[in-house]
Image (tube, rainbow, N blue to C red; front, side, top):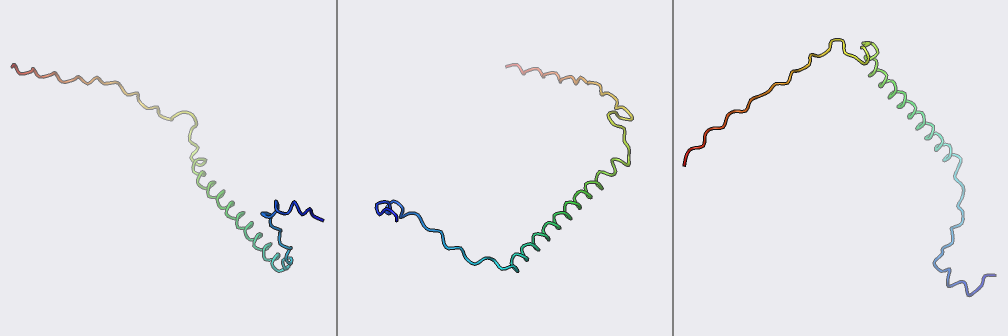
Length: 93
């Protein structure tokens, strides 16, 4: 039997509702089917992305470019000194 003195301290608490009837098997089957369709769609999208990435990188393998160095080295540019224009003489005052 609950203590009557403790009741005012528990007024803010609410009781959980009684459990309702369990879901029908048809609802669970539909949920399982939707989950299966989503999983298959995710696998197909992932496979398509991997295939697209492989096709995008395929030309790099086909060309067989040398790694780490250039075939024809670039000529070094020489530094140029650009002379400044001489100042004009100030007009006498």
